[in-house]
Length: 344
Image (cartoon, rainbow, N blue to C red; front, side):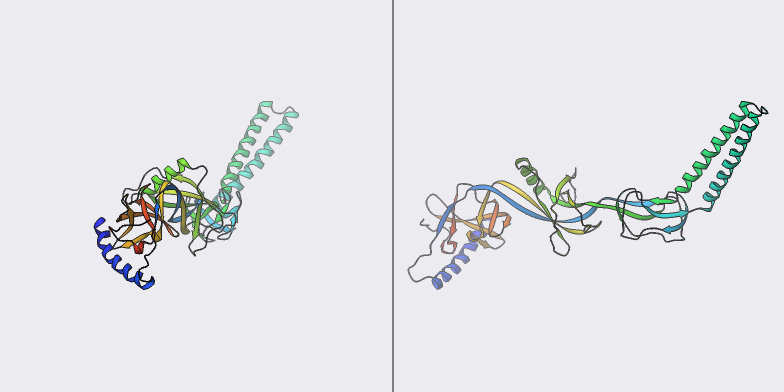
């Protein structure tokens, strides 16, 4: 607000004059440099807390009831699609398969016997065909029993890392009961929430700039993840309570360092067009505000409050307070006064 800058100017001016007298010789005015605010493209980097998730993360469930006969893999182990994870056993399924195999043997013998009798013209060809059909039926039932028994072999549906085992060997499990988890960590996804204003700036920036913005991930220990990410998705709706929208960035994970559930911080660069950028040294920090000396056409300096949008090393990207073409005190703000004449 203008009032806060004016009030601060009294205190700042008094302090500045005291410092100027201490640093400069009597009669030697402090040099003031004036510059013109010029718009330019500027890239600001915002940091957001994120949660890292696997490309795919599923619960591996028991395809049928039975006892956990064997846990083939270890927790955290990397597996390939089709690898056996867990074997379940069922006495009833084994018994049924044995019975069906026995029926196949009986049907095979009856079929062979019918063929011999047909060659001796003791039975008709229809009798042979009947036994052939019985044999085919017995084999089909045996195949079905074998398939049911195969349900007890739990395999990995895709390449990934095995999670914590929910059941131990010897435990009886029901159909559909969770056994473990499997995560595809080849590509990891970082989810983070962006305020609406930053979302609009990003969309505007993306429409002007070619290529994808560089996204970096900082791990929980403060180290920078060595692989850059790529923005791959934005949620379709805003969160009514927080006024934010979820972004998703994908990161390659060739070394397997990233795991499901990790936390971190992502940095997202946004390019602002026609931004006003001034050095931090050109500003005065007042009570709850920051001001700059704006020099009018008459050469008189006036304090004006500015709103900082982003901080870049030793510069400020302004949101408001100074427009293109206006002159401001670049250097020597300690020697300027509100309402004082500035000699360029």
